[in-house]
Length: 347
Image (cartoon, rainbow, N blue to C red; front, side, top):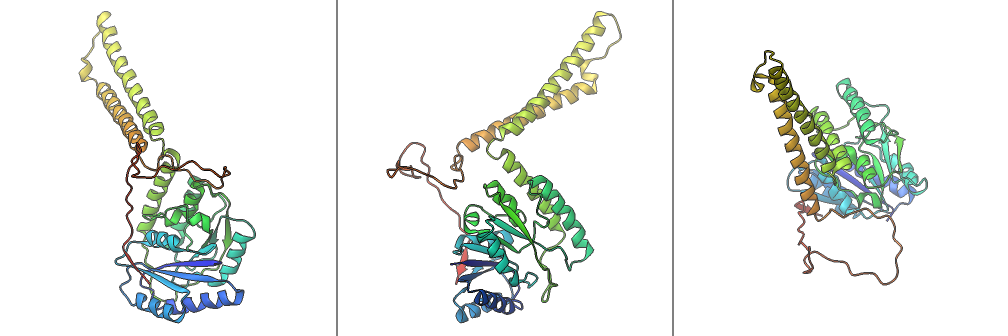
C-alpha cells in the first residue's frame, strides 16, 4: 500500500464528507493505493455515523472510535499503530489542511529520501492572539530540539516513512513534538514543505491558549528525557553534589570565622545566630536529596524492562541466531510484561 492518511478528529461531522471526497479524488488522480484512518476522539456529534457511512461507500475509508475524548496524541498513536502504507500522512479534519499537498509530500519521502516532512503554514488565517504565541513557541522548540530548519512544529500536515511511526510513541500532548521524537529515535533526515493554510469552514477550534503553557512543559520533559532519560544520576547527582559541596564549604567558613574571632579576642556571635549557617544547611540538605533522587532514578532504570532497548536500523548476522530471552520464560531476570491498550471500537 502506498499511503495511509491518519485523520484525528473531534466533532467534525460537517467537514468529513467533503474531506473524504477530496482525499479520494487526489488518490485516484495519482493512482495511489491508500487507506484513510479516521480516529474519532470521543466526538459527541454525528462524526462516527458519518465515518460509518463513508466506510460503507468506500472500504478504504476506515475508522476507530474512542469511547471518550483522550486527545490528539493518543488518536495519532492509535492511527500509527494501524497504518499499513509505506508513507503515512497526517492531517486535521477541519479542512484547513489541503489533500492536494499529498502527492508532493509522498514524493519527498519516497524520492528525496526524507524520514519526515513537516508542513509549514507560512501564511496563516489565524488571529494575532494565536500567531504571535505560535512564533515564540516554534522559536523555542527549534532551539531546544536542535531542528533548526522547521518553522512550524505544530502543523498537523506531515508525512512519514513507515519505519518512523512504528518506532515512536506519541502520548500525552506530544503530538506537537513528533519531529523531536523522531530525531530522538535516530531519524535525522527531517524536511519541511510550505503548505497552504485554509480558513476554517465548519465549527470552531478545539484548542485554547492553555496549549502554549502545556507545550513548553512538554518540551522541557522531552529535553530532559533525551538528555538524562537513561542516566538520571548525571543530572541529579552532579547538581546535588555541587549544592552539598557549596553548603559544606559555607558551614566550614562560618565555623572558622567564629573560632578565629574567639582566638583573637574579638566579638563574635553564635554560629546558630548567623543566617548563612541555615542557608548552608539548607543547601546541604537539598544537595543530599537531589543526589538520592538521582540514585533512586538509577535503580528504577536498572530494573526497567526497556533499559537496553535501542533503535536498530539494520543488522547483518549469521543464519544461526542466538535464542532470545522472552519475558516469563523462567530465565533469571525475566519479568512478565503487560501492555495497556486504549479502549476503542474499530470499524
